[in-house]
Length: 179
Image 1 (tube, rainbow, N blue to C red):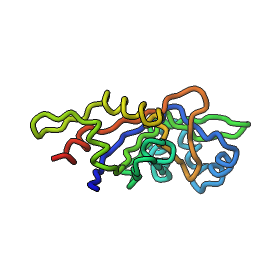
Image 2 (image 1 turned 60 degrees about the horizontal axis):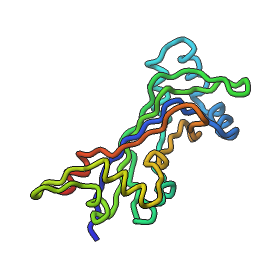
Image 3 (image 1 turned 90 degrees about the vertical axis):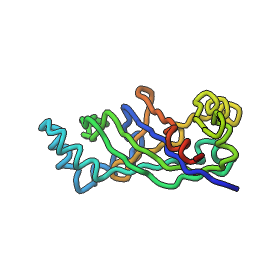
């Protein structure tokens, strides 16, 4: 079966560590004091640079039942970064937080399934967001953003009520796979 690699772009706005273990993980990082210092001084450029060295992300296919059922795979993180660091106090502990986490993920899935998300005219394929959303609704109803996970120094940052977790397919990455 033919498989296609494609990119999805995600971001997390307002995420923070929600597990106590993650707070402990952050405070034990070698860069913790230095990062807190940069943020408190208002040195966003140095804070972002230091934080970006300790970022990771993952796309968890199992969180999207339709992708898991059809055999999609997470291949790699293409890039990840943070913007606008600030300090959040959780239980009296200063925790580095970031207005945005951004990342691109490379996924792979069956061409036969992905073709359901495409409009075809002559031999030209165009990604159709509506067809994709309909396919997602018909095959489990999970959102693409449910697969995105972001980490700072091994600590998972997520939402707890307020904020935004979003993810979308990069149309160009799929369309060029059909050429």
